[in-house]
Length: 282
Image 1 (cartoon, rainbow, N blue to C red):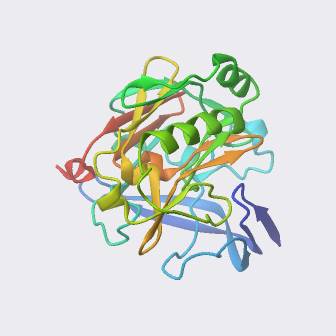
Image 2 (tube, one colour):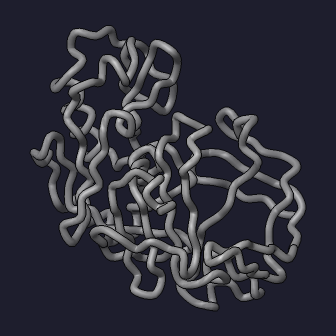
């Protein structure tokens, strides 16, 4: 039996098992077989909202810093398939978008600017240097990001949607959004854990809103447009998709959509290239 708890409050429990997995490669369709892959067959999921009906499960992309992280030989799928992986998600709001990509091994696209990557307990951590709006850096003490980095508290997570941000940095982002735009719109009570919601749609009312820049050590910037910055929670209400965190900061998939994100576990870097995911099919 197993039970696992996720950072966003979800949990899963059921039977722990192994299976042989077979993949058809992107190189002329050759078949790659991976024996004894550990996985959980879930019989119960709990948490805010539960898994959406169209979601079949969760594929973990965790990795270990060494064999000692997996003493029972339960090596993660990522390292069984090579030393790198990449993904490109075009739009989280369109579940039928046909050009999303997840690649392992030799098929990985490690393109764009890169920043150092750190591993701890199977998770991926990075160092931030600041956050900007419309090209202008917010007044956030650099010590805030330095302290989070030293404590391995800034995580890259493909399993989370929202951008969780440490309180001091979050307050600066929230204040900037409040004064920059939407002052003519009607504020509405936000559902937890969101804090800033308005009447309207991201597509209509958010048009022209300045982009948010997430700046990494090394000069790399993740540019987040209005569709990554705001979440359409109902047909006529949208909310800031950045939420307060008292501990760890997490860069979720809303901020990463529209990018090819490549993890090089040998060089220990993560790279970002803004692009149309369809271009990876060429």
